[in-house]
Image 1: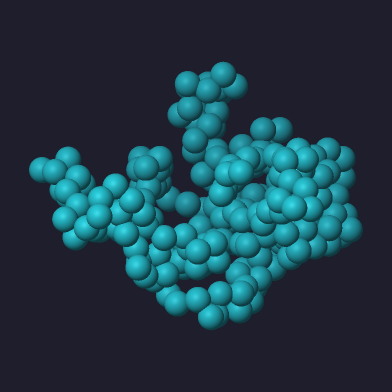
Image 2: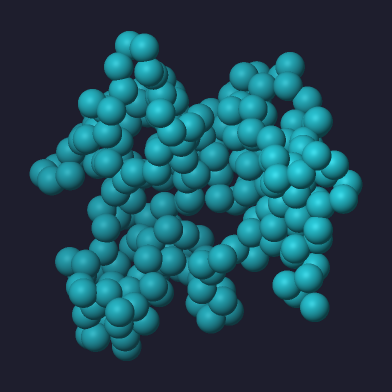
Length: 224
């Protein structure tokens, strides 16, 4: 069985597991307003997507937040398995309960801490040229392989602005859910308190050679 399965369908994936092959969910959460802004900016340029709508290209964030394309409390709906209809506090409680019982939570705002947590939790170690893997890890955490650098330069709505308040209103359940996740992230440090920081490098080795020190420096070779 695979060590990790990647899927956006957490409920549909349930039959993959049984009493003898149990899993633990982990994911990285983003502040709901930041997520909404990022999605909007992506949809504005994603002409390669089959659902691309050119009318979004010149739309403002405020117009988007008032329209039908904006997501409404997506995390709460997804985690409570209630993708349609009105929400109430019971849906928020259900989403919080799922996160608390099922997830190792990560935060996009704390990528390094999140990756360190997962490495310690799941006992992940480097196994193919540890030196290069450390460089690759650092590059991915600080830059990312799929980051939208153009949109990073755009101003984001600030708390108190019309745009921010409109998006916050659309995420009136997701915001308290995210705040709960932030507190849970701190609490879950207890789960790895006995596992050393930097576990990925402890006795790390290269599975392709007998002497890790002599591994060819592929990263440096490819970036000269």
